[in-house]
Amino acid sequence: MIKSNYLIIGTGIAGLSLALKASANGSVALVTKRRIFDSSTGKAQGGICCVMDKSDSFESHVQDTLVSGAGLCDSKMVEKMVLEAPNRIKELINLGVKFTRKTNFSSEFDLGLEGGHTKRRILHANDMTGKEIEEVLIKNVKKNSNITVYEECMAIDLILDDNNVCRGAYVFNNKTKSLVIFEATIIVMATGGAGKVYLYTSNPDIATGDGIAMAYRAGANIANMEFVQFHPTCLYNVDAKSFLISEAVRGEGAILKLKNGQQFMEKYDTKKELASRDIVVRAIDTEMKKNGDDCVYLDIRARGRDFIVSRFPNIYSKCLDYGIDIVNNMIPVVPSAHFFCGGIAIDENGRTSVKNLYAIGEAACSGIHGANRLASNSLLEGVVYADRAYKDSLQFTNQKLSSFKLKFLKNVEKNNQSNHPEFMEKWNEIRNLTWNYVGIVRSNRKLLEAREKVKILKKEINDYYDNVLLNVDIIELRNIVCVAEMIIRSALLRKESRGLHFNTDYPFMLSKAKNTIINVISKGE
Picture: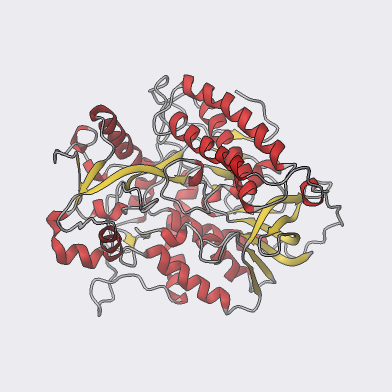
């Protein structure tokens, strides 16, 4: 058993930021299922929002967020996040993050513009912002003696005592192939999103919704899982797998076109390419289906070589690796699952409905994103809630908790069958199911069919899980089918179309916006 003051699961911007702050108040066990740098944060290209320009205002940032969220945002929490942004940005800079400035000798930051924003307020490090932030945070974590990093350690389930207080987690050590018990005074889910539950995603392989599934099984309330944000522009290339073409490319003037060069966004929104992501994604989806095309194209050639190479060096280089010179050619793009606006329901300080359990970052549903996240608000949310959770947790770090009994995990010591690789085909079944039945455009018929299909898959996978030796693949498989079920349950409960959730049987938006709350013991639709 490994004991600490804090157990933080996940090493993206939220988990790393919290670990650094929590280390001032006690010992921190930082658990990650792969390596410390494996996270969605490191893949973030665009940037992080903050009001920095004199022509901008906090009110404007708040309003843009609320408009994007389609009436479902918690306005108070949005206001607090926007107001706290400057201090969180200063902390990142003080840690060593170098955001791009207008010139090498300028004190002014080069602020980007992205879809849904009315002002330039995106701080960035060229087109590798997440990588810059992640590397700086990791550097600071590694030299902190109060933080112990446990790599290749995948959390399986949360440990609850007889009073349903969260006390820690069962963790599978993939190096030693053994079970480790982590106990802590404060437990925090910072496990990120679940893009890999879909067939096409911009997310890295680690994004399997582990924290959301674990919290769900522990009885936590889960909110708004129907709101899955599809990014409009993922590179369409069989070898690229999941390479994103940043929102910032459109912010700098790139135009969406069909293969014949025809523009189409003006038919869908007056903001054209800078409309919110839900609008742009549905426009692309409509055009692809109407024309029978496999993709659409993003054209930034008008900006010229010097600008393209200096502003988007990573995108330029990566596309070149795949034989696409974006200086002279249009970029083939398709929508892909990108971000979960829903997740573990939390209050303003990151507390969940399970005592002693916090959730921050993409794994959580804070109410900030509503029905559709505004571009580049996610990294900001991560650092804001890391700070809020830390400050709130101070009152609990010295609490005395009673002893508790560990439950027996039957698939640790008793195994009735060996692992069968062919069972992992269920992974593709789930991902095809979500893409085809709970994707960009939904219907009652498809959702009801999906519910029946996922019920069968979940039973098969759980039965299999209970009778095989533990490994990362089967733990992830168990989690993604759990997440798929949550998405379907939530989508069936929403009898309207709002933001990222579009149901052809309910193409209207209801006058009153309500959150969708589910948990493991709640009744079905």
